[in-house]
Image 1 (tube, helix red, strand yellow):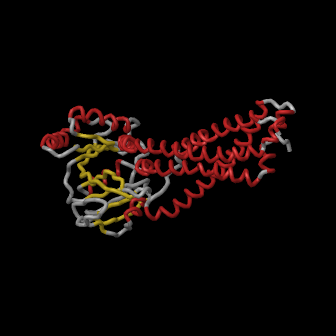
Image 2 (tube, helix red, strand yellow):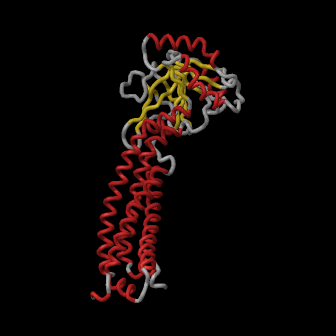
Image 3 (cartoon, rainbow, N blue to C red):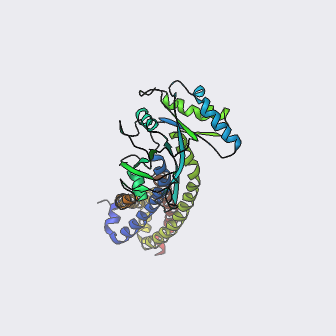
Length: 374
């Protein structure tokens, strides 16, 4: 094996190399941090990833002006609707919460129909729920994730009198069915609800190619005439969630800086001690005519190989950890939805911030080594 090969050094110095690889693998903690931060938005957005099949409008507040706008829009909304989405159903919008993987509660807006006919129209004009699915008065259907999060099962009653319930209802409702829907979703109907809002649906069961685009256009056209009315679609819900969680990216940046500084100092001290023991080796290399570039390649290759092994080991550890956590947390309605791009980028940035100063400091040390001094 070539003495200038990175693997030659690792093979001859296994204990030292393994300790460095373990330290570099620990930078994967940044990836796990990104997984937790991204999960807040991922879980919320998971229910809204498909192009919009409906638009929900509701008044933003509670005063006479808003109430007047709501009443007027409800009576004249058909004049504002595009040809692809002429169906509208009165609904009651409620706020529900669920526990996030980080331990605090997140909220979602949900709506309930007031008649069986309206609910069946919703089912018929969307593909969110199974074809032909129906409910009776004061019944609801929810996703498996939300049911696990709330700790309820089919047949349970969600009491309207329970102040600690995750949702405020007008009457007791029965969990008729739990379905494998994406994310946290809940639908139902009750004659006890009052109509304060409306959902806008496709005109026919066969959706027009422009349906999603037309529904999103209502986010602008309706508020232009009714300033106190807000219109939500799947895309609007996702955008809102990203805005509300944007500050978390700033905190994640602080985490990256702290981790990079700590590991850079630790690794630099480790390499300083290691290269001090190798000063005779590098002094001889210089004495027999190896160029600075050749020595730089040797230093860089050793560190890059150990770093690569460390990243792979850290990645495998993260993958196993995520799978185990998903198995353990699913019964609580929590799950890592997908790999975190924020975590991957953060880990690579952190890694580069660690490696660069270590390489530069080691090269400065090597330049000072001289065989005539020993």
